[in-house]
Amino acid sequence: MLPPDDFNPPVGIAEELEPGLRRLLAPNPSPMTYRGTNTYLLGERDIAVIDPGPDDPVHLQAILSALHPGQRISHIIVTHAHLDHSPLARALSARTDAPVYAYGDFLAGRSAVMQDLAAAGLAGGGEGTDTAFAPDITIADKEQIQGDGWALRALWTPGHFGNHLSFEWEEAVFTGDLVMGWASSLVSPPDGDLTDFMRSCEMLQDIRADRYHAGHGAPVRAPLERVSWLLEHRRSRETAILQALEGHRATAQALARKIYTDTPEALIPAATRNVFAHLVDLAGKNMVTAAQGLSASAQFQLK
Image (cartoon, rainbow, N blue to C red; front, side):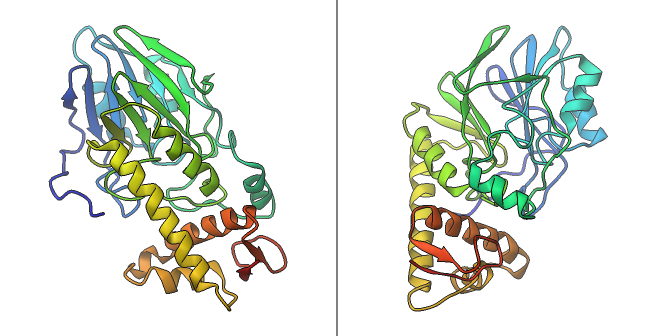
């Protein structure tokens, strides 16, 4: 699915999306972040900042300048500890005295298999991990956070990242990088876990919402259709990987080059990470095996 051509909001200017919610685009466009990170300002008086974004003094000032007379930042809420979402939380907290809320530090929620891969030396990819991140207040799955005139219900949604939270707000869900409209979410071990990703997307299907506000890109106005597409997209990738392994051994990179035939060369490393995420999931389901143990460079074959 291609990103909508009409999504190109001004950088650093808070735009109202609906009553009580504004979006502020960070100045960090890239192939991994699209136009940049969406920072959300929720509330009319006590403001919750959802995903303050990268450590950028220009974006920090833009957030502070977006406050109207009588408004204050009371909560800083982070969906996950990637470098394009969480680093500015500490500087913003220092300027406002607002506490930082998240599921946990950058290691929180990481599955056992991903812990083993990290211990073996596999480093994160994609947007980069904010290894210095730690919240002031941890939020449990299904826990509610309240401010003046607003309430959020936290949903632990690992998959893109172990400590990833989504937040249910009235008929909407802030989905971070789990579900976006402009691209399928990157699942890059050891930060990302495809088994968790599929489970989190299936859980979202049970949440009655009529729109998603994602970490990047425009609001998703047909959320159930989008989640169904993401799940089917992943299942089709799994099928393609299994077919490519019939009668062959191959590395994740070789499989990525064979399957992602229309992908630009610059994005092949990300595609390789996605394929490796599938292979880890398939190994967990006892459908493939890796020679000399599970690793990003291993030769995989059908079980």
